[in-house]
Length: 209
Image 1: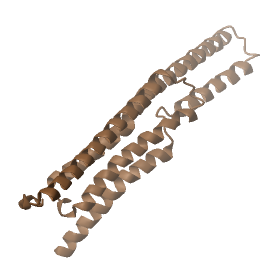
Image 2: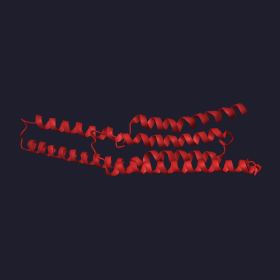
Image 3: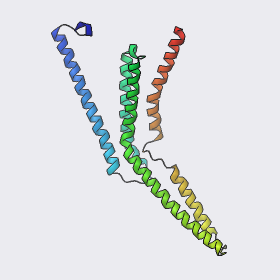
């Protein structure tokens, strides 16, 4: 057992085994809690949320726990690499880093996917309604032109302009329920350590060469 870094003393081995089991049990509880929390967020967004595209702020509340969970996964992987720097350039380690990064991105986006689809559907519905109204006003405009009724066109022009403003505003409404700062923070947590690792690797190669 000493070849694996474990003590031959039964008491020490039992203590190490107990520590390992407790650590794994805590990790299992954390994984279960995380999955349960993310599923709950997904369910609330999908089945218990009223949509108002002009009042999206309440929908941003659950993006923060999802982002923190994803950041926690990234932190776990970075701490693991920091504790084993000799393995950081190994292909398996790079694959593990890519795996954790993918899981972190999935952890952030999956709970929000359901409400994202609902927002897309609502936005599409409102745009279609606005387009139908725009088409109706254009039809009235054509009728007036065909009948040479050109003296009262200002009301139609204002209506068309208002509908264009409405459509432009609708198109600018985001369909992902998060603040821009939340995404920037998570992207920084994902990319900054990778950039630092890349710079360190390049410096080591250049100095070694």
